[in-house]
Length: 122
Image (tube, rainbow, N blue to C red; front, side, top):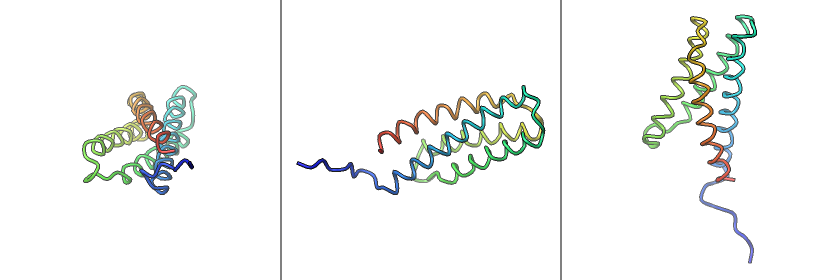
C-alpha cells in the first residue's frame, strides 16, 4: 500500500509557512547582529540600514497576519511585531539599544514556534 502525502494543508500553505520561517530567522539574526553593533563601534549608517531591514521584515510579517480570522494568536503576534519595530526605532531615533534584548527574546520564541509548525507541515 502506497503512503499518501499529508493533505491537511496545501503546498501553497506549506510554502507560506517556510517563507515566514525564513523571514523570522533573518530578522532574529539581524537583531542579534544589531545588538553586537553597539559594542563594536559600527557606523551610524550601518546601524540604520540594519534597523530599517529589521523593521521592514516585521512590517511584512504583520501584513501577513489574518487579524480577523487569526484570533488571539494573530493579535498577539501583531503586538510582538510592533514591539520589535519599536525596539529598532529606538535604535535609529535615540541610539537606544536597551529594547533589543527583549526583541531578540521575542524573535527567538516566535522562531521556535514556527520551527515546530514548519516541521509539522513538511
